[in-house]
Image (cartoon, rainbow, N blue to C red):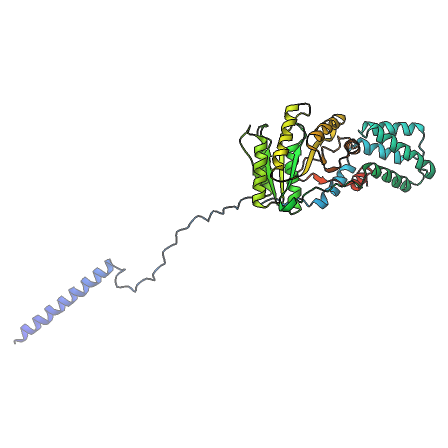
Length: 371
């Protein structure tokens, strides 16, 4: 091959190679991401989710105050109250010398506190006799004498325990009775709390079918401490509701069936007869262990009239005194027991849910004396 041809192809090949290299360089400059080492793979950014909704559990059941501590708390409240009886006792103890005028004033105070004429005369006579001998120079001795005499009036030997043991494995049945306005349904709910605090299983019967919202009120009291309520439509037969409650209590094996009855005027014969019917119907299924009469402590003599009529109809076994706070007259405790021969078993000294306690004569007297 001639040398001029060889030189031509060498030059031509170089030009082609140069053009190719230039093309590659140009192309790579326009696509810098290609040919470079692969970039580290980035993990996808997670999607931020809303925090989980915390569903609050249903409100837990309330834990009622233990029955053993209630009366001590109520005693302190009584000691700090403006109770007329407590004031009269404190005034007597504050005297260095008790003359005839002092005794007259003291006697008037006792009567105004609804202690009653008979118990007042008895207490004053006994105190005058004992203090005439021992005197009041020693306040501790005078206080001890006064405490003894007050306790004797309250008769600490009376059985104030609640009948909460049914016969033959049946539930104890407790009827709550009283006139309108005494706080009977509220007291029924508070008593359920007392029983729950004593580890009793309880079933409520809403046999007050006349008052609007009475069943709802009682149901709410029960729900707060895990107690079920047997109820019916407004205006239904109270005896039927009471009957169904006891049947349910027997079936479920509860300890206590607590039946709230409609408030009624003691002067209304028809309503009182109906209350007797409720009791008779209930007793076909289980004996009635307690009939608790709820009395407003501020009603005085009228409360005693009510108590007598109710006792004749349903054989009241115990008294519940409500509103025995600073505006009440503590002497009613003595008088109602003397008139009926029925013990005060529960007292209320406030509006709190646990302001109902088994009555204790000694602690009640200590509260009156400010101890």
